[in-house]
Image 1 (cartoon, rainbow, N blue to C red):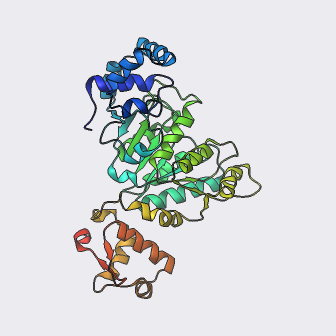
Image 2: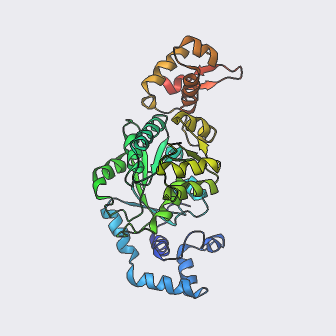
Image 3: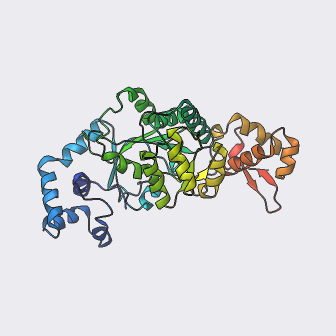
Length: 367
């Protein structure tokens, strides 16, 4: 439906703020076709006493009109689960948030997303790998999603932003007006300009421990796959990975040293069936079949890297098979295959029935 507003948005904000009420628990009401305002009234009629008491307690301390006014003052958008603009992948998950507070913009292309998560206290190896994977995957056009925590999360957000067109989404475990961690203030501004800060928690919500598992389900719901870089055996990153697996999303794990605690979580995931990855291109190749609905053809030429532009020059005079492209250029077979996939997803080339690739000039004429 079009964007929810007025009394229905107020009702959704109250429902979202009320402990125990989530999209999944309210699904029967939505399936019945009730509006959010009607759901509030139905609960107040006392069908379930614990819900009635919890809702009434929330209404005594929470004013949704003031919440919307504060959102306007902070340039924060409030997306409803019922809005057409609500991210479709997240909406398909088993328990999407009733509302999302968004500082920045969520684009349709952000559906082509990879989540990168890991330890708040990573090794140098973990930090280096998080940066390597995030930067390369952003270069390939994927949006990097993470939880804005110290360590692996921060490294992933920062590396994605090193690409001029890179995008990143940060999912918080607190209200958007709560600065946490304190040292991430500059990063907050960068993320909101080149992606979005996202939370389901109302303004003023502190970063309580119980908030982070809820945050993790949003991270998993936003992405086509989750990469765990480093994690202890009880890390919250494993929760994110397990939630992703339950939603049918891909789970990737980076192997580490066998004598480091930070490797135990990732090695456990690998033993349980997660894909062991050694390079970002392995993730891109694994996700490529799922990227088609989310990657726009005829993307602007500035989204092509210099390497892609140079490789694309091979197709100016003739159409080439992958083997011919390998012989014509100076790249390895694996690099050629990766570039062919990237350029096809970006609408710069297309594969013909005879197996040859031809350049799509409508997408490349400005190169």
